[in-house]
Length: 221
Image (cartoon, rainbow, N blue to C red; front, side, top):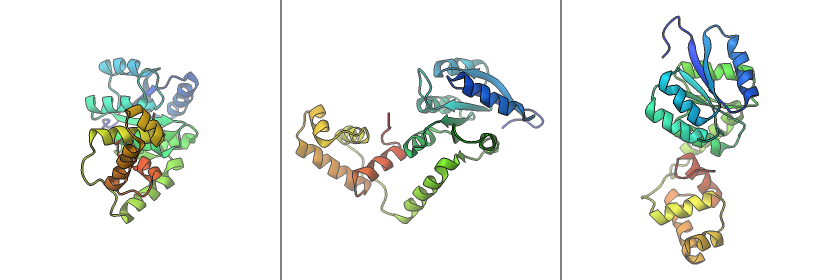
Protein backbone atom coordinates (compact mmCIF):
# COMPACT_ATOMS: atom_id res chain seq x y z
CA UNK A 1 0.00 0.00 0.00
CA UNK A 2 1.18 3.48 -0.79
CA UNK A 3 2.69 5.36 2.17
CA UNK A 4 0.87 8.25 3.80
CA UNK A 5 1.38 11.64 2.09
CA UNK A 6 2.98 9.99 -0.95
CA UNK A 7 1.36 9.81 -4.36
CA UNK A 8 -0.13 6.61 -5.75
CA UNK A 9 2.14 5.62 -8.63
CA UNK A 10 0.67 4.22 -11.84
CA UNK A 11 2.21 2.77 -15.01
CA UNK A 12 0.23 2.79 -18.28
CA UNK A 13 0.60 -0.21 -20.59
CA UNK A 14 -1.23 0.31 -23.88
CA UNK A 15 -0.03 0.31 -27.48
CA UNK A 16 -2.36 3.19 -28.42
CA UNK A 17 -0.75 6.58 -27.82
CA UNK A 18 -4.07 8.43 -27.76
CA UNK A 19 -5.42 6.13 -25.04
CA UNK A 20 -2.34 6.69 -22.90
CA UNK A 21 -2.49 10.43 -23.51
CA UNK A 22 -6.14 10.57 -22.48
CA UNK A 23 -5.57 8.61 -19.27
CA UNK A 24 -2.54 10.75 -18.39
CA UNK A 25 -4.63 13.90 -18.74
CA UNK A 26 -7.27 12.52 -16.39
CA UNK A 27 -4.75 11.28 -13.81
CA UNK A 28 -2.78 14.55 -13.92
CA UNK A 29 -5.73 16.43 -12.41
CA UNK A 30 -5.53 14.33 -9.24
CA UNK A 31 -2.88 15.55 -6.79
CA UNK A 32 -2.59 12.18 -5.04
CA UNK A 33 -1.98 10.22 -8.26
CA UNK A 34 1.14 10.07 -10.44
CA UNK A 35 1.91 8.51 -13.81
CA UNK A 36 5.29 6.90 -13.12
CA UNK A 37 5.79 5.61 -16.65
CA UNK A 38 4.23 4.23 -19.81
CA UNK A 39 5.00 1.31 -22.13
CA UNK A 40 3.70 0.04 -25.48
CA UNK A 41 3.79 -3.74 -25.11
CA UNK A 42 4.09 -6.62 -22.65
CA UNK A 43 7.81 -7.20 -23.04
CA UNK A 44 8.53 -3.52 -22.48
CA UNK A 45 6.43 -3.63 -19.31
CA UNK A 46 8.38 -6.58 -17.91
CA UNK A 47 11.64 -4.72 -18.49
CA UNK A 48 10.25 -1.55 -16.91
CA UNK A 49 9.10 -3.33 -13.75
CA UNK A 50 12.55 -4.79 -13.18
CA UNK A 51 13.80 -1.29 -12.32
CA UNK A 52 10.69 0.45 -10.99
CA UNK A 53 7.68 -1.13 -9.28
CA UNK A 54 4.62 1.14 -9.03
CA UNK A 55 1.48 0.51 -7.00
CA UNK A 56 -0.76 -0.01 -10.05
CA UNK A 57 -0.52 -0.98 -13.72
CA UNK A 58 -3.35 0.01 -16.04
CA UNK A 59 -3.04 -2.76 -18.59
CA UNK A 60 -4.65 -3.15 -22.01
CA UNK A 61 -6.03 -6.69 -22.37
CA UNK A 62 -5.01 -6.77 -26.06
CA UNK A 63 -1.31 -6.03 -25.59
CA UNK A 64 1.19 -6.79 -28.39
CA UNK A 65 3.74 -9.61 -27.87
CA UNK A 66 2.18 -10.84 -24.59
CA UNK A 67 -1.59 -10.53 -24.15
CA UNK A 68 -2.95 -8.83 -21.05
CA UNK A 69 -4.39 -11.97 -19.44
CA UNK A 70 -1.15 -13.94 -19.70
CA UNK A 71 0.81 -10.89 -18.62
CA UNK A 72 -1.40 -10.53 -15.55
CA UNK A 73 -0.66 -14.12 -14.51
CA UNK A 74 3.07 -13.49 -14.90
CA UNK A 75 3.01 -10.22 -12.98
CA UNK A 76 0.91 -11.56 -10.10
CA UNK A 77 3.28 -14.50 -9.73
CA UNK A 78 6.36 -12.27 -9.69
CA UNK A 79 4.95 -9.17 -7.95
CA UNK A 80 2.05 -10.27 -5.69
CA UNK A 81 1.56 -6.78 -4.25
CA UNK A 82 1.24 -5.12 -7.67
CA UNK A 83 -2.32 -4.06 -8.50
CA UNK A 84 -3.62 -4.46 -12.05
CA UNK A 85 -6.53 -2.63 -13.65
CA UNK A 86 -7.44 -4.32 -16.93
CA UNK A 87 -8.41 -1.88 -19.65
CA UNK A 88 -10.41 -3.27 -22.56
CA UNK A 89 -12.92 -2.62 -25.30
CA UNK A 90 -14.52 -6.01 -24.61
CA UNK A 91 -17.85 -6.05 -22.77
CA UNK A 92 -17.98 -9.83 -23.19
CA UNK A 93 -18.26 -11.74 -19.90
CA UNK A 94 -15.83 -14.39 -21.06
CA UNK A 95 -13.00 -11.87 -21.35
CA UNK A 96 -13.97 -10.46 -17.96
CA UNK A 97 -13.80 -13.86 -16.27
CA UNK A 98 -10.46 -14.61 -17.91
CA UNK A 99 -9.00 -11.34 -16.65
CA UNK A 100 -10.28 -11.76 -13.11
CA UNK A 101 -9.26 -15.42 -12.86
CA UNK A 102 -5.75 -14.39 -13.98
CA UNK A 103 -5.58 -12.07 -10.97
CA UNK A 104 -6.69 -8.64 -12.23
CA UNK A 105 -7.91 -6.30 -9.50
CA UNK A 106 -10.29 -4.43 -11.77
CA UNK A 107 -11.91 -4.47 -15.21
CA UNK A 108 -12.50 -1.11 -16.93
CA UNK A 109 -14.12 -0.78 -20.37
CA UNK A 110 -12.61 1.88 -22.65
CA UNK A 111 -16.02 3.45 -23.20
CA UNK A 112 -16.42 4.02 -19.44
CA UNK A 113 -16.39 7.62 -18.19
CA UNK A 114 -13.49 9.55 -16.67
CA UNK A 115 -15.29 9.27 -13.34
CA UNK A 116 -15.25 5.48 -13.62
CA UNK A 117 -11.50 5.46 -14.27
CA UNK A 118 -10.86 7.46 -11.11
CA UNK A 119 -13.33 5.34 -9.15
CA UNK A 120 -11.54 2.20 -10.35
CA UNK A 121 -8.16 3.52 -9.20
CA UNK A 122 -9.61 4.62 -5.87
CA UNK A 123 -11.27 1.26 -5.15
CA UNK A 124 -8.23 -0.76 -6.14
CA UNK A 125 -5.88 1.45 -4.09
CA UNK A 126 -8.02 0.66 -1.04
CA UNK A 127 -7.82 -3.07 -1.63
CA UNK A 128 -11.23 -3.52 -3.27
CA UNK A 129 -12.10 -4.98 -6.66
CA UNK A 130 -13.52 -2.77 -9.42
CA UNK A 131 -15.97 -3.98 -12.07
CA UNK A 132 -17.15 -1.80 -14.95
CA UNK A 133 -20.85 -0.89 -14.84
CA UNK A 134 -21.13 -2.56 -18.24
CA UNK A 135 -20.37 -5.91 -16.59
CA UNK A 136 -21.68 -5.40 -13.08
CA UNK A 137 -25.28 -6.45 -13.74
CA UNK A 138 -24.23 -9.60 -15.61
CA UNK A 139 -21.72 -10.43 -12.91
CA UNK A 140 -24.38 -10.07 -10.21
CA UNK A 141 -26.74 -12.32 -12.17
CA UNK A 142 -24.06 -14.99 -12.46
CA UNK A 143 -23.32 -14.85 -8.73
CA UNK A 144 -27.01 -15.21 -7.90
CA UNK A 145 -27.37 -18.14 -10.27
CA UNK A 146 -24.35 -19.77 -8.65
CA UNK A 147 -25.90 -19.53 -5.19
CA UNK A 148 -29.29 -20.71 -6.39
CA UNK A 149 -27.91 -23.69 -8.27
CA UNK A 150 -26.20 -25.81 -5.66
CA UNK A 151 -25.43 -28.51 -8.21
CA UNK A 152 -22.98 -26.37 -10.20
CA UNK A 153 -19.46 -27.79 -10.09
CA UNK A 154 -17.42 -30.69 -11.33
CA UNK A 155 -17.65 -34.21 -9.99
CA UNK A 156 -14.28 -35.74 -10.67
CA UNK A 157 -11.23 -34.66 -12.61
CA UNK A 158 -11.14 -34.14 -16.34
CA UNK A 159 -9.20 -36.64 -18.41
CA UNK A 160 -6.61 -35.45 -20.92
CA UNK A 161 -9.01 -36.20 -23.78
CA UNK A 162 -11.88 -34.39 -22.06
CA UNK A 163 -9.67 -31.32 -21.67
CA UNK A 164 -8.88 -31.43 -25.39
CA UNK A 165 -12.54 -31.75 -26.33
CA UNK A 166 -13.56 -29.00 -23.89
CA UNK A 167 -10.98 -26.60 -25.34
CA UNK A 168 -12.31 -27.22 -28.85
CA UNK A 169 -15.91 -26.82 -27.74
CA UNK A 170 -14.99 -23.45 -26.20
CA UNK A 171 -13.32 -22.47 -29.48
CA UNK A 172 -16.62 -23.16 -31.25
CA UNK A 173 -15.78 -26.38 -33.11
CA UNK A 174 -18.58 -28.78 -34.02
CA UNK A 175 -18.59 -32.46 -33.08
CA UNK A 176 -17.58 -33.39 -36.62
CA UNK A 177 -14.68 -30.89 -36.64
CA UNK A 178 -13.43 -32.11 -33.27
CA UNK A 179 -13.63 -35.73 -34.43
CA UNK A 180 -11.60 -34.91 -37.54
CA UNK A 181 -8.93 -33.01 -35.59
CA UNK A 182 -8.54 -35.74 -32.97
CA UNK A 183 -8.93 -38.59 -35.47
CA UNK A 184 -11.86 -40.05 -33.51
CA UNK A 185 -15.43 -40.99 -34.40
CA UNK A 186 -18.25 -38.50 -33.93
CA UNK A 187 -19.88 -40.99 -31.55
CA UNK A 188 -16.79 -40.89 -29.32
CA UNK A 189 -16.79 -37.09 -29.31
CA UNK A 190 -20.50 -37.05 -28.45
CA UNK A 191 -19.71 -39.39 -25.57
CA UNK A 192 -16.99 -37.02 -24.28
CA UNK A 193 -19.31 -34.03 -24.62
CA UNK A 194 -22.00 -35.87 -22.71
CA UNK A 195 -19.50 -36.71 -19.94
CA UNK A 196 -18.41 -33.08 -19.75
CA UNK A 197 -22.00 -31.91 -19.31
CA UNK A 198 -22.48 -34.47 -16.53
CA UNK A 199 -19.23 -33.57 -14.75
CA UNK A 200 -19.97 -29.86 -14.83
CA UNK A 201 -23.70 -30.52 -14.20
CA UNK A 202 -24.67 -28.33 -17.15
CA UNK A 203 -27.73 -28.71 -19.37
CA UNK A 204 -26.24 -27.51 -22.65
CA UNK A 205 -23.01 -26.55 -24.39
CA UNK A 206 -23.59 -22.79 -24.04
CA UNK A 207 -23.71 -23.02 -20.24
CA UNK A 208 -20.75 -25.43 -20.32
CA UNK A 209 -18.62 -22.92 -22.27
CA UNK A 210 -19.52 -20.05 -19.94
CA UNK A 211 -18.69 -22.07 -16.85
CA UNK A 212 -15.44 -23.47 -18.28
CA UNK A 213 -14.13 -20.02 -19.25
CA UNK A 214 -15.29 -18.37 -16.03
CA UNK A 215 -13.55 -20.92 -13.82
CA UNK A 216 -10.33 -21.21 -15.79
CA UNK A 217 -10.87 -24.63 -17.42
CA UNK A 218 -10.47 -23.09 -20.88
CA UNK A 219 -9.76 -19.75 -22.52
CA UNK A 220 -11.27 -17.81 -25.40
CA UNK A 221 -8.64 -16.68 -27.89
